[in-house]
Amino acid sequence: MTGYTGKILRVNLSSGKISIEEPEENFYRTYFGGWGFIAHYLLKELPPGIDPLGPDNKFIYALGPVTGVALGGNGRNAIGAKSPLTNAFGETDVGGFCGAELKRAGFDAIIVEGKAEKPTYLWIHNGEAEIRDASHLWGLQTREAHDAIRQELGDQRIRTALIGPGGEKLVRFACVLNDLNHAGGRTGMGAVMGSKLLKGIAVRGYTAPQVADEEGLRKIVRWLADNVEELSGGLKDSGTSGGLLNLSLSGGLPTRNFQEGSFEGAERITGVTMRDTILSGRGNCYACPVFCKREVRVEEPYQVDPIYGGPEYESMAALGSFCGVDDLKAIAYANQLCGAYSLDTISAGVCVGFAMECYEKGLITKKDTDGLELRFGNAEAMVQMIEKIGQREGFGDLLAEGVYRASQEIGQGSEEFAMHVKGQEVPMHEPRIKFGLNIGYATSPTGADHVHNIHDTAYTNSTRDLKHLGILEPLPADSLGPEKVRMTMYHIDWSVLVNCLGLCLFLPYGILRTRDIINAITGWETTIYEMMKVGERALNMARAFNAREGFTAKDDVGLRRFSTPFAAGPKKGVKVGEEEFQKALKLYYQMRGWDLETGAPTAAKLYELGVGWVADELRKHGKLPG
Image (cartoon, rainbow, N blue to C red; front, side, top):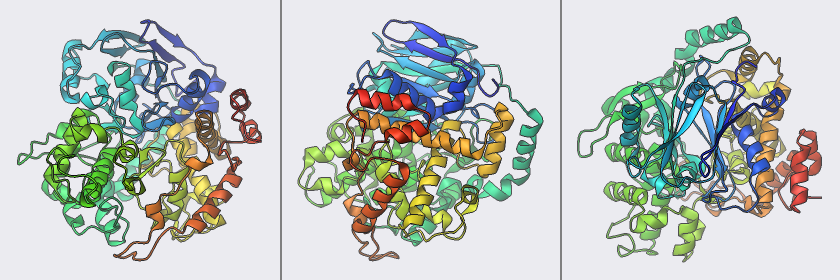
C-alpha cells in the first residue's frame, strides 16, 4: 500500500505488552483512517457500559492516508475513546507535526489499552516503541514536560502529544496537546490519557510515506503554492478570528452564554487587532504553506509565551465574547493556561460563561465561587477560574465536570441555560443564524460540534463544491425545509470523511481535488461516491456505538435558548422555531435511515454501508431497531 505504513501499534499499559498488527488493505479502504479507525475499534473491542475513565477504555491515536504526506493540510490526525464528558463516542481532530511524525516513524495508529501502575509515556521511533517512566513528569505543565522529554531523549526534533495537570486530574474536557500549540480539544481525550497514567507520546521518524503518483501529487502541490495567497491569504494575515467582527455585526457572535449575538467589545478582540498588537509570529502544521496559527507574546500584566501559540477563533470567542470579556491580553493568557493545563478552550469558556450567568441570576454567590465576582466582563475572574478548573480547586472542581454535571449540581433552573448537547459544550457558532447547524449539533454522536457540521452561511449565494454532490441551488441560512435537510446531510458526510482522511478543512482543495489527492497517494482510483460512503459509514458506526451505550432519539435535542428569539441586535426576534426544527429532524432521520424512536441506524442501512457486523453487534445487545 502507498499512503499508509500498513502497521498499527498496540500498547497494553497493564501488562506492558507491545505488539504490531498489519491489517489487510480492505480494512484501510473501508475506513480510510482517523474517525473510521476509531469507530471500528470502539465497536469491535469495547464492552458496552464501561467506565470511560476505567482501564477497559481504549485510547486511539489514528492517522489518515493524507497525514504526513508532503502536501499542505496533511498535518491532522484523530484521537478517540469512549468520552468521559458524554459517555458516548469520543473523537477529536488535531493538527501540528506529531501525527506526521508518527507516520514517518512507521505507524498508522496507536491503540493504548489498560492502565499503567505508575505514570508513563510512550517513546516511538523508527518502527519501535517502548514504555518509559514518567513519574518525574507527572504534575508538570505541558511545556515543562515537552522540554524534559526532549532533553531526556537527546533530540530537540522529537514531537510530542501530551497532557498537563488538567488531564492528570481528570478534568472531563481535558484535551491532548500536539506540539504544545495544537489541541485535540473536544470530548475529553486528555482525561482518558490521565486515567491510564499516560503523560504523553513522544515520536521521532525518518521514513516519509510513499505515494502512488508522485508527479500527480506534485501538480497539486504546485497549484496550491501558486494560489495559496489568493485562496487562503486572509487566514495567514489575521487567522481564524479575522471574521469575528463581521460575525458580531451580523448578530452571530456567541455573547454572554448565547444570550446575545453581538458584542460591543468585538473590535478589541478580532484577529486584525491581535495582528496589530500582540502577534509575534505565524505558525503552521507539517508542510503547510497557509500559516494560519497565531503566536502571541504579552509581557504585562500577564506573561504569555508564543510557544503555546495564540487564541484561534473558538478560543477568542469562548474566552472573550462568550464571557463578556474584551481584554485581548487576558484572553491570550487564559488560552495559554488552557494549553499548559491541557483544557479544551471551548468547554472551559462555556463553563465559565455558564457560571457567570448563574452568578448574575443569583443562583450562586461569592461563597460558592471562592470569593470571585464571577460577572460577565470580569477578565481577571475568568482567568482565575480557568486556573482553578485546571487545578480542580474550589469551584473550579465543579466546573471541571463540564457544564451538564455542574448544572445538575447547581439546579434552580440553571439546566435551561447550560449550553451543551449530550454533555458536550456548544462551540462558538450560532444556530439562530445557521439553522442547519442546529440539526448537526443535535445529531452529532460526539455532542455539539462545529467541525463535522454544516455552516449554512457558506451556501447562501452558491452551493460551491456541493454541486459535485448534486446540491445545485443555494439556500437561505435560516431555511430548514427538505432541501436544507438534504444539504446538511451531504455536507456532514463529507466533513466526517475529511476527519477520516487527516485533511484540514481550511485548505481550498474542494471535492474534486480531494479525490485527486487520495488517488495520487493511494492509487485506488477512488470515486466521490466511494469517499462519501466512507464518511457516511463512519458517522453511522458512531451512532451505532451510542445506541449500544443507551442513547436514543431523545438525546438529539435542540437547546431551548436557540428556540428563544434574540431580544436585541441585528437578529432581534429571530429564533429556531421548535415545530420547524422537529419536522426537519424527523425528515433528517428518514433520509439517514435512522429509526425514529431509537435514533440508531437500521439494519438495512448498516448492511447497505457494508458493515453488517455492526447490525449483529446491536442485535446481540438488544439495540437493533425494527
